[in-house]
Length: 312
Image 1 (cartoon, helix red, strand yellow):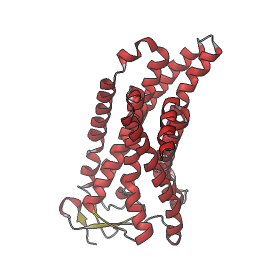
Image 2 (cartoon, rainbow, N blue to C red):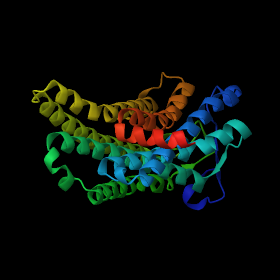
Image 3 (tube, rainbow, N blue to C red):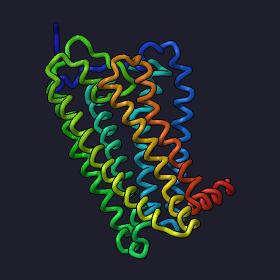
Image 4 (cartoon, helix red, strand yellow):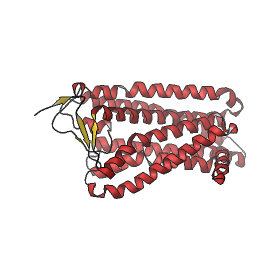
């Protein structure tokens, strides 16, 4: 059986098979996928445009919304153009370098997205638990520095993933049963020892997600304790309303993320097409809904968005 190693196979190709078992329905599946992607791009670019244009929105909270919008655009754009090419034109081939590049950016942006959610939880904690010191604790410069730390963490943690894959041999099976180069999907088709790759991927996921969820849980635990001490019912309701949008976004993102990760590793009884569909929806639905949620729940942003929409 012939095998190639990624370290010396610049001309070798992988084949992205799309959604196994639903090849005949690819065209129909592409309709909602493309609509979700377009809505996601329009919504997130609108948030970026409005915040950049409105001086009154140049605050830490809205800077974080811009970071979230950028990661949302990155998440869906990493995979959707190639997925739609598979659905529309049967363009299933992808070069090894292209596959590893897509994998790196996808997982790095996912890690960055999680870091932004942690920073947003910290922002809400300071706003509710220590409002008098909010402007001194969280300036735009400090938020930018926290964003840079999240980016550096994402790059350092994810960079070994494609580098470790390059050492693996791949035999006759070059077909990836997925619409994009997800780490485990590529690892599964290797004919070499993938223990290190699997352990590193699982370790990074558990450690990073565990730390992020712990920090978010700690922030909201302190927020809930502070809110329960508020005697005024109106102030109590206002404090909770400031967190509603972030809680919705956080639950949606982490729930879908956990479900796709767990089914990939432990869901052998789940049909392949179900897993692949959910893995794609995880990269489409939150980026599409996030600007809608924040547009509805954040009064300042909602008013500015309405002003620009009425001009169209």
